[in-house]
Length: 296
Image 1: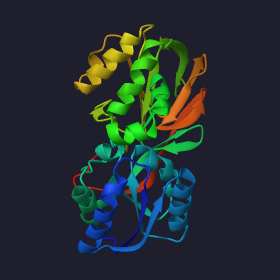
Image 2: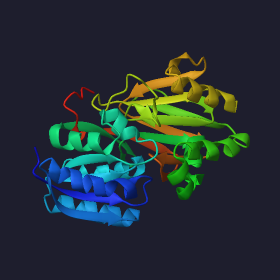
Image 3: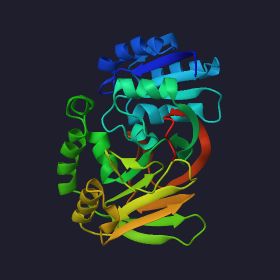
Image 4: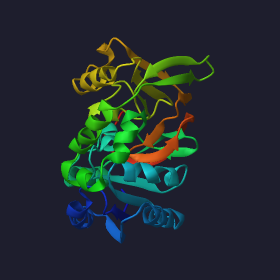
């Protein structure tokens, strides 16, 4: 077990202000000294504090925040000796769900103090690492347009509220998809999701996806109609995503996407830019605390 940790909390994440004191109190009770506590309110501060702790050789860096917070710093940990401890305190907490980490402070701290270190894959999009999912098209626009204050108080509902007006004026786009070294495949769609992990929001997107198999999983619908995307999201939340007739599901170690017209690309709630985008896998790049029962 790690005997000390640096704790970094992103105060802009939905639940961090209400959980951070409990984390800092609970860790020493369980035998892990808090060597430093840093709170941040911007991406620049977050990167600086986490990067400083890693460069100083901190054996364990505990990060409290949502998927965007956690995903944005995972690249700093890639192939370094510092281990990431996860305190899920955001809206969907997809990364924690994929790792099997409980969503309460008590469960997350228990994973940190009594779990084990796993080396899991990171997705890479145009050179930027991400932990869980990338969205292209409608979902990326919804993530950008959901105000931070609404996300803090409305949670997942914030994305629904942002998606409804966007879907009413959404226009399909043509996407050219290349999986590994295969010839490109063209579809028309409103949204594509490329997952490194298993969860997209609070439900599994691709139940068989893992963060240790060296593959990315693409999901979308080949449909001009926005209702194709709506059916996929409904089926996903019912646990039956593959029952959508016009669903497109592929797994590959590299996925290249061109879109006409160009589409917004989002990584775990943070805007990356626009297409074209090339995805790859950095295998076993991230050392992270997981429950003892974690298997994939």
